[in-house]
Image (tube, rainbow, N blue to C red):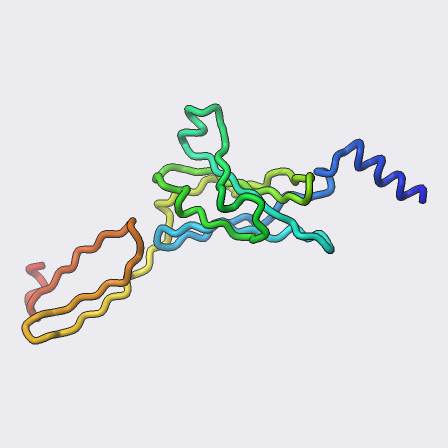
Length: 163
């Protein structure tokens, strides 16, 4: 019983936040201008830990007193992944952070090491289908999203140097 009271005494002195660790292994997966922040789950037996994500762009750092912007789609989510695609809209360095929340307790923020800039996204070749239809070529390109524009060039066989 003595240790039970000691636990609650420490909880009252240190606050509940001291017992909820910050998310770890924070990384970004970015392919074809689709950006996802991921992290390892904070495990609390018998409870569902929720997470909140925030970003800080160049504007927030330089002109808005270092403020952070919450990502509403990733506020109090049980998922350990956050789609940042709509929020990362400029080609500037962003800072990203995530914290765990359980009831009224919040962990310290865990941050992505360094900055993320969307210009570092990995690009994959588009899916392209070409069909001959008489004297016409039908070209079909997979939709990769609004960030992409394509130019299709064609030429006669043997005339590649003129392209």
